[in-house]
Amino acid sequence: MGIVTTIIEIVKTIVDLVKKFKK
Image (tube, rainbow, N blue to C red):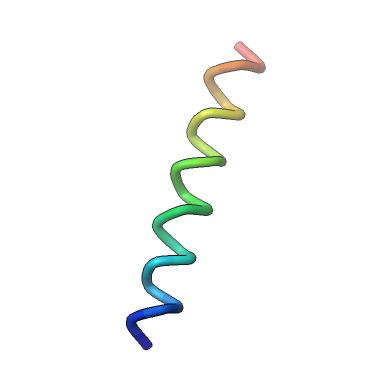
């Protein structure tokens, strides 16, 4: 489950960056 948590954190970071770039 640790790996899944890490992937979720990475995805959240990418999504946050995408939102900033689209603004």
